[in-house]
Image (cartoon, rainbow, N blue to C red):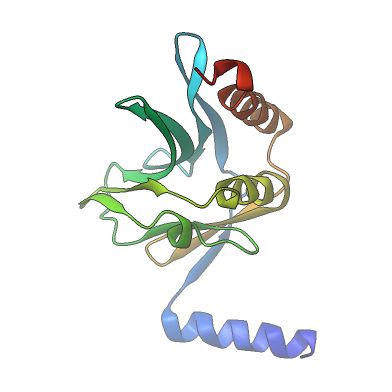
Length: 170
């Protein structure tokens, strides 16, 4: 398919489905690092769209009854707008396909958490941090340009490296 045809089809889809695409150069990113006895228990990133809207994507280590599991978490919060849909996509991964459990849905909050297949979240974060992706809020798509700031990438990699380091197995 030629480049012109791809653009034409994309334009038609946007018209039919009333989708807005925003090339979000103004997105702000912050690291999410939570420690438990100096060992990372949550690693991820916060995406700040504007003063009204924030999305968090993270992985968490949870220990229950002597068993440890790792879950993925995605939340979207708006101070003033109702949220009907929130998602994060990279070139090959749709976050909703990885984290399938909708934990909480309120007018201004969407929270999804769940266990995932071993390498899915690693691949997702790798693609997001290096190549960028799309943050979808209702009918608006915010294009995330990659690579994301090196400070955020390094903090995430250090956090997850420590989180899964064998010396913290017990």
